[in-house]
Image (cartoon, rainbow, N blue to C red; front, side):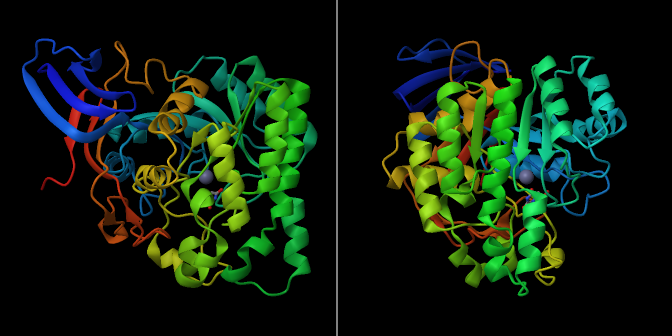
Length: 423
Ligand code: DOR
Ligand code: ZN
């Protein structure tokens, strides 16, 4: 491979970055010897996004997405590494499911790991996998409620056993904290079922209660806990307090929970149906504050593709979730620019922290000796998000038409160059 020199704007100012084979060989103000120069002055270069929350599907759900299409979507969005969620068919709840996924993932063009799925009775199967010290397993995912073809855990003792297992093998427990018993209560309480009141039906109380529960158990067991897609200001408060005394607590925000609120559902209907639901402006503000003060560790896209035919079904039938890989970085970069939040903080949230939490060695920073996973981005020109042009099979988005000041120009994955918008 040629030795390539990039001259770009980084979060630390204008730098020369030398790429040799799959690694970053140099970053600084000198001009080391090179075969080729990529002049990206005026463009921003950041480490490629490491997205800890992606539902790839494939296998028995190739109609929704495959490892090929997800790779293209990730690259188009400046995402160079993903971690895949276990609620697939087959599910990643035992070695058979994991091996099927390993086979399917061979088609990937991006870096990846997998989260295992916990059920009420697969502790031994999880241990069988973890005991072999798999480097491709990042964490163990738990759903406290049904959301999209996933197993639910309701028994507190089972939760404790899983937390203990994760601690023994130093893996992170990731939790979708909406609590099923609470959701059931609200479903019964409210007769009307419509997307406009998704936020009432899947009530905030249920996410808050679940978050409270898992924080309590994690404090008792001492394992690493990662709370997925925090959506309410009350959860932020609970997590902020918990983090003061427990360094093993982490949490994630999605671009949609950070920026959108339930009022958009009037325009986008089920295309904005997601769990946990889009909440209120008040919640957006609390999440933004938590992004700024460091309470939130990572941005996860929760890329959750479904077909358009499925999404246009009635509210009660349409699945929750929408694609996020192609919008996450552009939306977050644009928001940070408007709020004057430094790019350095963005890089922590989208690359450095997820690399640390999920043990991606030598990734997540632009540093000598690290892998050359980079996103080169035009942050000068404004353009709309056009979901019809997505590389994902799911060509819709509640962000459709939003103006962003972040076009992904070029992406490097392990030193390999992908030019975007070049036919
Ligand atoms: O909206 C969602 N979609 N939330 C989840 O928890 C699962 C996801 C999916 O897999 O579609
Ligand atoms: Zn998810």
